[in-house]
Length: 205
Image 1: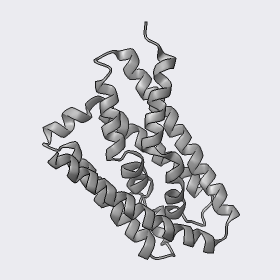
Image 2: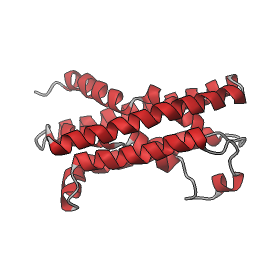
Image 3: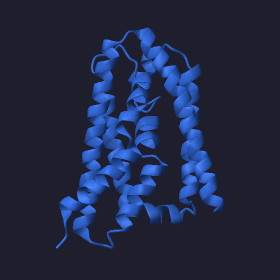
Image 4: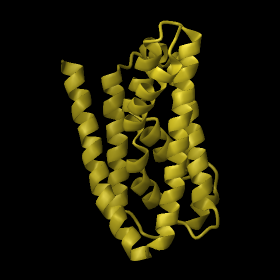
């Protein structure tokens, strides 16, 4: 008999650490500055839903999909690192004032899709982890569903963390938010560089 409760916590811990809901809060805070009512709440919900759909796709078809394109996981990690590095640069040197029109136009500067859902939530590390977890279940449908349920639980934690980030933003002033944005832009740049380094090491190992 399968011990589902014994499996849930190790899987939850692994995905929680890789997705890092707490660490994603400052990035979310920096990318969702808008005077519009409910803007952060909508972005938070869409980012988590899109991230869940992307990760569910890779859970069931990710390994075959990447192999069919001739893409290795190290290469995917390098590409994700480069994209996050660009976002970090924009956070440091970008314009403080956003164009309200761009926020209202679907598909234009949609931070819920990029970079929040991909690659911040559904990044190379998370995709690699979900593919590994699913491959370890050896075709057992019940345990595969447990992996998906655990993933949904972690992303629910991410949604709560995003909502708390919005609350913290209202408590702090604009100047403090700007300083936080610059600091975490630097940190995000360092993290993305580490992604690239790890990808290069894995590709030549």
